[in-house]
Amino acid sequence: MPDSQFEPATEGLPRRSPVDWDVAVFWGTRTAGDGPVMEPGVAESVVDELRLGAARATGLVRDFTALEAPDDTAPLLVVNRAGWIQANADGFARLLDPVVTKLAAKADSTSQTVSAPESATDGSAPAAPGRSLTRTVGSKVAGAQIGLMFGFLASRVLGQFDPFFPPAGRLLLVAPNIVHVERQLRADTADFRLWVCLHEETHRVQFTAVPWMRDHIFSEMTALLDSVENTSVFEDGLRKISESVRGGRGSLVEAMSTPEQTEILDRLTGVMSLLEGHADIVMDGVGPSVIGTVEEIRSKFNERRKGAGSIDRWVRRVLGLEAKMAQYRDGAAFVRGVVEKVGMADFNAVWAGPDNLPSKAEIHDPAAWIARVHG
Image (cartoon, rainbow, N blue to C red; front, side, top):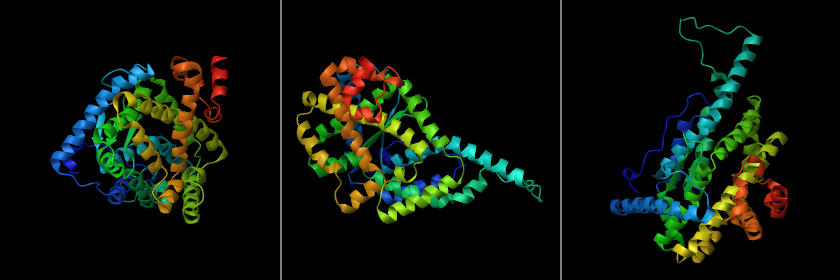
């Protein structure tokens, strides 16, 4: 699809990082490719229809969930694969910048206690903080590795809500992938596009109607990053990732998790399962009233989620995408189980505050959550 149809997603990448994000964007874009070929007029109509679908979905989601999200927050961007990669590179850089600053300061402090800092003999400024960290990890190598991951994901993801984009997040719809999948499934194009918009718009509503959710997840992510105490964690993580890739065992998340990180990841798994499952329930709950082929789309889409072949499934496992698929399935079962027993109004107690979020264990036991929250 022509790049001119899409909106830029970049906001400028921090330069102090163990990852060269420009390299990540370069390799990610090269790996992802452009997607299906369409004439400019067709591409323009796809973008317009997705924008209209997202706008229509807002009221449908509000009516089904009873969640009131303020209007004109969290802008919508219809992007191509390169735009999605750029947006995620910006997002990762923004999340990692605080921990990089902390590690850089710690590395500088340790270096100064061992020996006096070297001064430049030519009158130039001393080395910037974090340069030793970048040298240790190999920022360009790390950027290339992450870029390959971005490239794989960018050819598959249909949409994403970025909650950390200031001030209230933004919604990304990846038009080439939506077109590719609707062709692959031989789905009714109008039905499929609205179906995707319902899922992604639900995420926008979740974060804008429940404003504490953004800060809660950000604090959990910060805690996860704060558990990184020294640069050897990056080195060990890269080594474990390499071993995982060679052996085909586990995922990147599993390879890099300490016991402390596992506890945080379990909490994040609980909330992410809730968010993804809730979005799936909404898209299928609203669907029959406005999407004539929703059952056919869901059946075909579930088969697609299993992965096309052995190599695809292996890459999904290494990247942790099998766990992501479980979040959709398990989260939807949790939401459905709670709503069936207490109704949507009492289910919405889940949005009252962080203490009401389901744990990873409660995701598999809706009755336990009901007992804890409603007594």
